[in-house]
Each structure stands twice: as structure tokens, then as C-alpha cells.
Image (cartoon, rainbow, N blue to C red; front, side, top):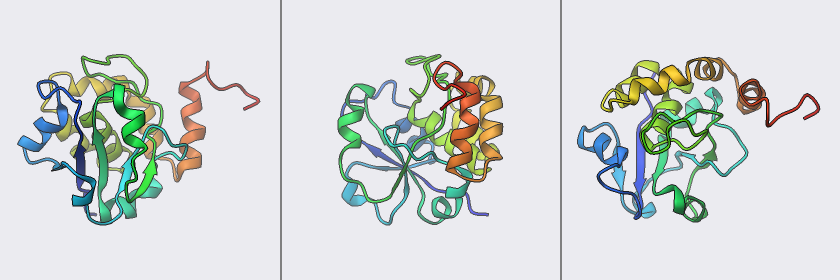
Length: 177
């Protein structure tokens, strides 16, 4: 088992003082890129604006090519994710942010939270927790999302992830959906 490499494409607009990606890079936990042209291969791209969910079924591709997380302001996110990036885009399932900027908001994860969630879902909980231990709010992310992360980790594919996340989103999904 090879732990997937976390690749971060850092784009303008993120406050450097609050940037979780820069802190991870300073500690050598991620590879930081400033241009999409610098990224080789076809990594799994964590993209909140696509419909196919990230799942344990993406493990082989992630181990081989890495996981790419875009680091930008949420204000610019839709525009930035429309840029053509080489790789397979996947969205993370229902998770609640623990970072101080978006605490309690569904899906508005920091770069560090997104990377940690992806590693956890793929079956690397120790590595996921080591990413977030750098932040005082980091361990709380796993407390907030303990049940969903455990459920997602045992899913086989994207379809099962979507099915399982419905249990955490009763107001969004109905029995007919």
C-alpha cells in the first residue's frame, strides 16, 4: 500500500495567513504547484462541482497518480474549477467543515480538510490525521465527521458513497429520490 501523494495547485485569492495548504507544504506533507502545467500525470482532482463522488474505488488511481486539491478562495472556486485540468474529477461526499473560517458549513472544507478526508476515505486514517494535527481545530474535523467518514471508507464505489451520504442529508434527499 502506497499512500497517495497530495498535490496542491495554489491559485491566487487565498489569504496566506489562513492558508492550510501553505502550512502543509512548509511541513513537507504536500507538493505545491503554482501552475497546472507543472503537474504531471492524471491525478484524482477533488472538485466540489462534479457529480461523481470520490470513493475507495479511486484508490489505485490515487496511489499511482496522486490526489490534486485546488487551493483558492471559495469566492472564486466555481471559476477556478472550470479551468481544464488533466485528471479525473471527483467530489467529496457530505462532510462538515471544522476550520474556523467555515466552521459547521457542509462541504466548505479547507484544503487540508479535503486532503485529509480523501486519505481517510481511501483507508489511510493515520495519514489523514497526521495532516490535520498541525491545526488546533484539525482533530475536531474527525469528531464532527466520524460516522460519515467511517461509512464512506467502507463503500466500494461512487454509487455506494452517494447512497450512504443520503443518511446524513435528510432534508435534501427524500425516499423517492
